[in-house]
Image (cartoon, helix red, strand yellow):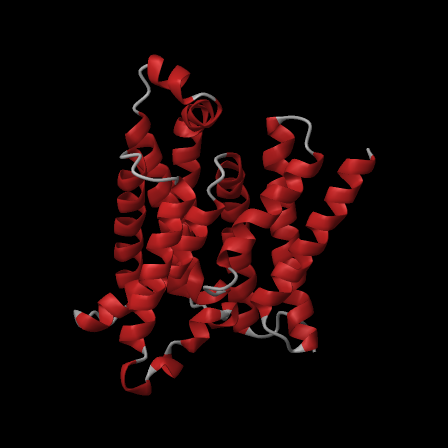
Length: 265
């Protein structure tokens, strides 16, 4: 019995090959800008996005999640720019509020069991149409990265200097946040709300442990992300375990291995 004799395994493998590089690319800048809380809050806000879709009668939960996720990301950026409190405090407050609102609405009448699968995700349920959506997001992200990476890097290194170079900081940060929201919201169904942030952070953090320049940083992050995704899918198939948790376990092992290797070197 071969691994790819079933269509759902072929689709899952194709999804991993698209999602994993996206996580590897975006994760590097998320780690650089200390935005782990930001991406985590975005993942948790998915519950509120689904709840909003239920309230307004939107049948496609992915659509309501994406719309709410983009709005949530832009709102977070706007609040952060007002400097009314520390960034981590703002994100924590918004994240807690969204989780509570989402759970309250979705659990009404004891119906939360219909949405519990989103907590861990199921990459084996992905369809051809959804793979096409992911591919379009992948292409758009690569184009954005080509044209905006240097500006993002400059902003993360020295915000005042970037401003003096006439970079439109707010616009660039908002665009970056929108791409994070798109990738997170479109991947939650297959990765899971509880695990999505780990897959964004772990490959980039592992790469940072051993990289000596920016090129290596991005290359290793993508390699670790793809390797974790593929191996996690294969191991989960043969052990009959959930794919998302298995991918995170492998990514965690890679992180600790690179951490101790980097320290010893």
